[in-house]
Length: 116
Length: 111
Image 1 (cartoon, each protein chain N blue to C red):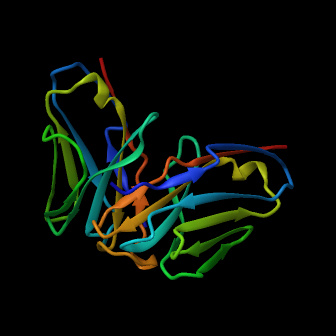
Image 2: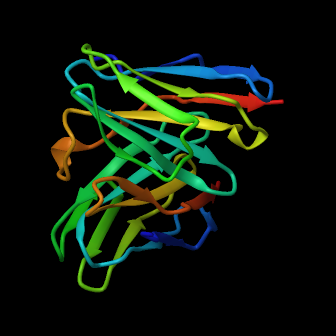
Image 3: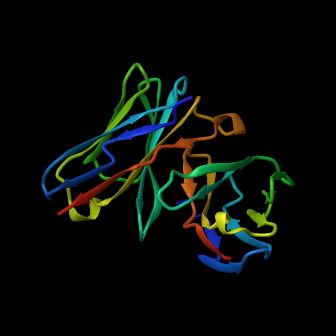
């Protein structure tokens, strides 16, 4: 079974631009979560999607948005980029949202975004 | 705000040493505790998901325990090997239905 894939792997943008990152979950997984990882803040939850609906959103400004398609693939968008948005963006998929071992999240390799 | 704390932040041990580190989380509205291993240049890899007070899980030389009443979990590595070098993350699944991660413990095992 193929793992979670994220594209692109690396991205360089300038302040004020916008960016779209893509995540393809493991086949059969319907839940996708996004996280931001920065050296100072660690892994922080951005949002979770299930069946094309956003279930939860973390404490991030409205410039961060996302969506999920009918094939469970997900995209996140960051508009009006700021220097502080430079980070590793990880997505994770699970069969469904849940709490037990069957709903373990599997992470992708991440997209490294650098904002200049 | 849910605070998940991990200690120590980093740890250097010799090959063959056994080691352990701690994850603390608020015990109220707790549902599950996840442990991940994150090696450099790789994706975080799930180790354990624990839900019940007193749970103990084991995978090879790595084991974990859970105390939901006092809000802590221990991860143990027996006979550390250089390939165990990684950052170990815990995350608490709380009533808000999202995983909240701790800052991680970076383990370095010297041959």
